[in-house]
Length: 83
Image (tube, rainbow, N blue to C red; front, side, top):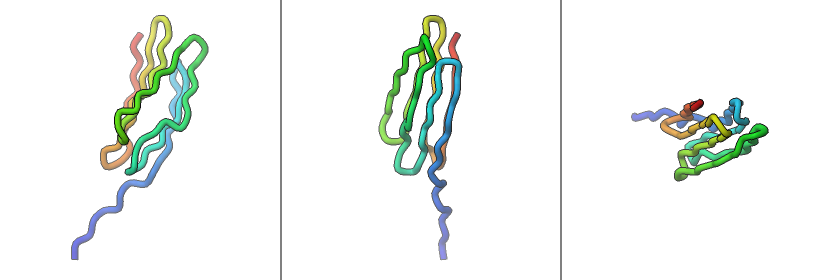
């Protein structure tokens, strides 16, 4: 008898960076931005890179904040700031 591990459950993660905030929902079916709000003086860009990867970017005059989310046998993310 062969058993396989159950897939990781869906999960929503909330992020707060100097340029704004966002919530990303991760699941085996896909990764989506539930909401994103830029801080004053920042612009928002959302890049859906296929069903399982998304980037949320907040860009101001002198700085950029980026949140990458993707599914790889579970939720994965990376938050970066470029000053």
